[in-house]
Amino acid sequence: MHHNTYQQEDKLLLAVDCIIFGFDKKGLKILLVKRNFEPEKGKWSLIGGFLKKDENLDEAATRVLHTLTGLKDIYMEQLYAYSKIDRDPAERTISVAYFALIDVASHQFEGLQDEDAHWFDLKKAPDLIFDHNEMVQKALARLRRRALNWPIGFELLPEKFTMRQLQALYESILDKRLDKRNFINKINAMDVLEKLDEKDMSSSRKGSFLYRFDADKYHVKVKEGFSFRI
Amino acid sequence: MHHNTYQQEDKLLLAVDCIIFGFDKKGLKILLVKRNFEPEKGKWSLIGGFLKKDENLDEAATRVLHTLTGLKDIYMEQLYAYSKIDRDPAERTISVAYFALIDVASHQFEGLQDEDAHWFDLKKAPDLIFDHNEMVQKALARLRRRALNWPIGFELLPEKFTMRQLQALYESILDKRLDKRNFINKINAMDVLEKLDEKDMSSSRKGSFLYRFDADKYHVKVKEGFSFRI
DNA sequence: GAATAACGTGTATTTTTAACACTTGCAATA
DNA sequence: TATTGCAAGTGTTAAAAATACACGTTATTC
Image (cartoon, rainbow over all chains, first blue to last red; front, side, top):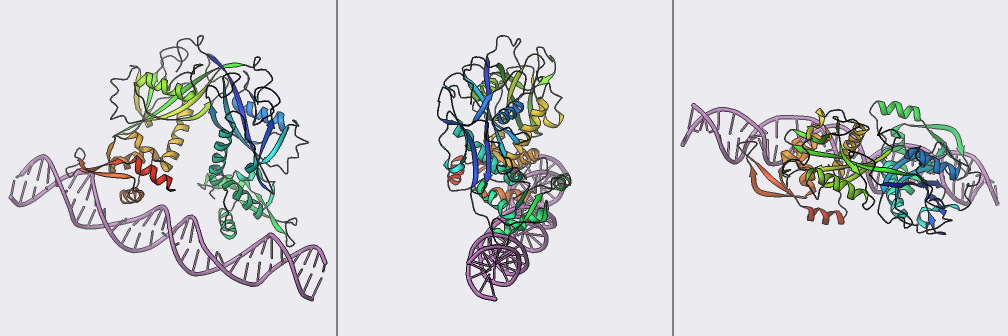
């Protein structure tokens, strides 16, 4: 519902900030940039940008991510709108946070566009400006919830991956150890992975079989009432 | 991350819209208003209003709800930011949706402040303007999820309620029938209700015992690792 | 061909969830 | 005051899901 005229209403700056998660051998990572302008110049922050008149929030988030990384077709999801009055000391700004999942290994990042951007181990990430720490905490909670209920983890892995990688990913996200046999049994019971004939030989002499997430099979099963659950 | 100067960035209207759920004998209800100004004058919509410079989103949502109903201290939670470019044909407006839970029975609503506001059975609610139908669907999904994992349902009931009311509430929210014995067993196992000596005699000759949610006991249990789950 | 180091596999136990039907207590009425 | 009606209240058993747990296998390297 809106007032009789919109003319007299306040207009405000609207930003998007992106919490970008990645995953590699060492665990969950987050992509941060060093701010090169005031306020808070030199401190670490999420990547972000302002919403423009001619785009919606999803488009703004996609644009911001693309500008920094050169990547498109990345999993993104709106998280929450942050609106504390003094959250940005320079000017009143409402920020809508998005979280994104990137497979660090396959996407080469022909060097990040912004040389001030770096991947941090999630557990070793520095303090961030404004309310960005809060955003990261909320994103992490959302990631955990999604990981348990949607086949979202695959966004963080290469197309082909081993069971050990998949388990390590879930262990990183949930921040607890899982039993190898129970994990495999559960995954296999869902029957949404395709086991390949290939092996990954990089982690052991025996090697471990590669798998691929079968999105088509998954969607068929969803239509039949199936739901993914770790 | 923000540009070097904020001066050149676009400023936009920011609104809040509230999905207000209630519950009475007949089930889940939603509070809607008939719009008395253009565009879409005469159609049903959620209550809403614009964000002002000197308040945050939570405050705006609280204010909007208070203006319409006279109520304070209502459960509210931010839902999602809607930003499609043409969502409001009058002018570009981003709307942040909130959902609220009200105990219809106890709050007398000395008459709703706005005579164009009405409670609708959720299943008989009219078509709404703009993207408000979409907002309601998302709110309902959130309500279902919350109801399963948080003791949020009590917000929709009077302070004292019967087991049958509580069960009917959950049946409305989840839109499925529950087994009476299993339901009571589950609730009792959680041990967060206080059984009173009073009975409600309005629904049967035998009468049914009244219960009260024990928020203190609940919080203590949460600290010990307990989590509510229906 | 022996040693290595991670891979891959199955079963028993516990816990949780789901299914299911009869007796109780109060008030109204005969 | 006895009878009737009507929703409230109550426990057990079976099925399913989650958890705990240990050893043989395989390809490579030395």
